[in-house]
Image (cartoon, rainbow, N blue to C red; front, side, top):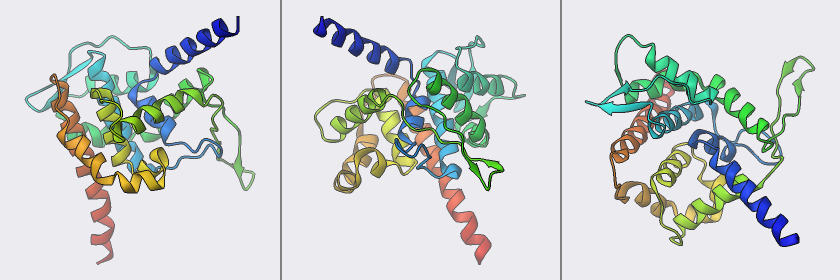
Length: 241
């Protein structure tokens, strides 16, 4: 009976993790489990969420990259508010735009993407929402972990990959790339491992041999996010001179 219950619980946890998009997985990794606050800088995180959304929409057969531009091929909703809002925005554009442009435009909707993904994770009983206010006026809600298993499964998988104990697939590479771009390596792998495996992480992203057309998308998303973040870092320096 105990074994059967354990097996059933494991299957449920696996099914729950399977329901998570790359965007959702990135959200989980970016939140401090106990404090329920975001570890990643908001100005950076929005671009990474945008990249995750483009990747997820491609996996679901909603968009493709043609002639370096994002094209909608299926307008039907995916029943995921964060992704559906992104799909709607891309579809309503007067012209097809480059990945870099959509990383920027969707990245500016960071607050909305966060909200929809958080609501999904709360609905799946992975996170819980705790109301908090600054000076008793401004909302500053926290989202501590309620069920740690899904995130632990994700963390272990990524850790096994950078420790060369498991081979990555396209989804893993995309997530590792996003974690790296968001400066979340220390949060996900721990300070010691993140420092020791810094070169290996970059090599995994750079040298992975993709088996299909997803390679172009991951490469473009990664490069577009890095380009966007470079601009963010350069502008304050220029303004200060």
